[in-house]
Image (cartoon, rainbow, N blue to C red; front, top):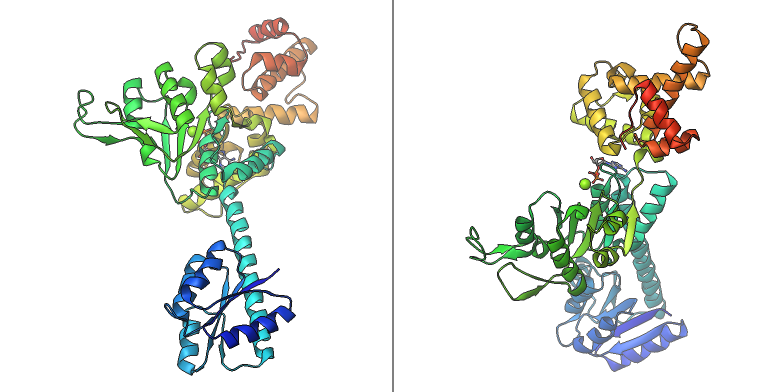
Length: 459
Ligand SMILES: Nc1ncnc2c1ncn2[C@@H]1O[C@H](COP(=O)(O)OP(=O)(O)O)[C@@H](O)[C@H]1O
Ligand SMILES: [Mg+2]
């Protein structure tokens, strides 16, 4: 039911309005002064305030200002016994939805109430739409129509506004950092800091003081107090990258932060409560690291609350074209060549390539092509040689015939076999076990054939 708060010192006026509005099915709360009016507002379920300008305890304008500041979705209609033009102007300037001079006809009140409620509703809808649009834009720079990416976006939207710990795994270059940032900017912590720490890059001794801070004199070189990243990230998000390579001692400390949400600076016994959202990333298979005794099992379960696995680019080829265009738009603009585009052949080659370095490799390659190309179009010739031959092989395979002259059957078959093997390896990022599966031959047959053709897998 729509609830209206009437703040008016005149009992007669309160009674009249109560009768009138009750007839129309509104629920009415009445207050005779400012303090009494603030109570139902604090309870938060008032849709509209009707308020006399001469309200004891601060006046109607004061109430209007408080409502605007604390409950911007609640509309205010001001009433005044004098109803001077000046009063009306002042009321509107402070954001009143309407102004009525007393005495007023019942119809006048009802029209003003309806209009104000309608306006407040529109504003509310507008705000909701804008938030939805903002959210879309924040994920807009993360490209992915592949179903696995769409599922990831869904998870991200669902957990963004919670404080749940999120673990993002995936090969290098698959967009873990990008996603962590998107998660932060979708959360209500977006105006707080996003602090990034590469846990694999720092030696253990430094890592601890980087993250937790230290007290002056805690160790040689600790010349002054230092605030750690956890404290610096207060109110925001801390992103712990490459967690899989962190040391055992560090893992113990991290476990404690996750359990108790407190830290201690190095050399200081006081505990400090931290208000941070923790997002972690690893390009290592943590489950395997646990099995190998390199990663604490208890920590693994602690951080494995919301787990997101970024698929490698070769497993979502339908996104490659969009990603390439996305990077092209960015670099073309950066290099002052906004009209640049790919030829079909170039795009096909990009889509067919193995991408062991994932989106990051594509990103670098597109920048290089933008810099090196001359015309308006980026063609096959502007791409690295390795990519061109993959493309040629793919094209030949698609046409169902080997490119080039007719050869003795045995030689031709050998050539064909080599090409197919190379293609399979490329599609599996060099992983021989997967390539064998793809080709439906056993591993030792594959190894034998690879050796025969002088080919190598990477893993
Ligand atoms: N889905 C994506 N959409 C747009 N750009 C992406 C996407 N994934 C990765 N990138 C870009 O590729 C590069 C590498 O991504 P990054 O998040 O640093 O990967 P990771 O942290 O997994 O190594 C960055 O420039 C990033 O902006
Ligand atoms: Mg990263």
